[in-house]
Amino acid sequence: MSVDPATVKKIARLARIRVDEAELPALAEEVNGILHFVEQLQSVDVSGVEPLTSVVHRSLPLRDDVVTDGGDAEAVLKNAPDRMESFFTVPKVVE
Image 1: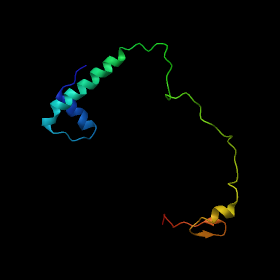
Image 2: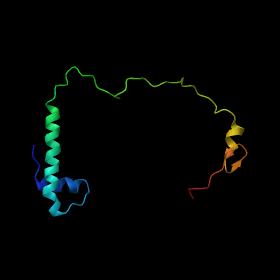
Image 3: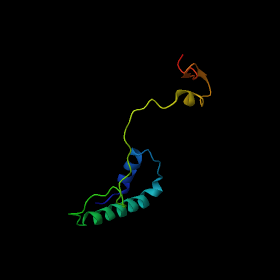
Image 4: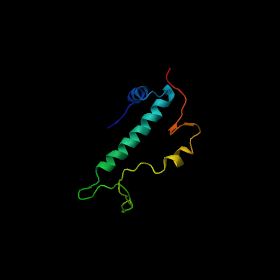
């Protein structure tokens, strides 16, 4: 696959990127180089290769998903910059 400067101009317009006319031929060559590299990758035989989510094979430690009441409400509200009874007080945002 080959990309010409007109195609690069269209891609730049779709991506909302301003590109000078003088830069279009150089960008077209760069895009063609990238596409050539992708074509080389497509020729690699990967049959029988398991997909990876990480290069290190280890599982993350998990904890039980338990619903709690958050512990001590008084301790939590002690960090509030402003409170009213047992609630956080916040500035009004909708008039």
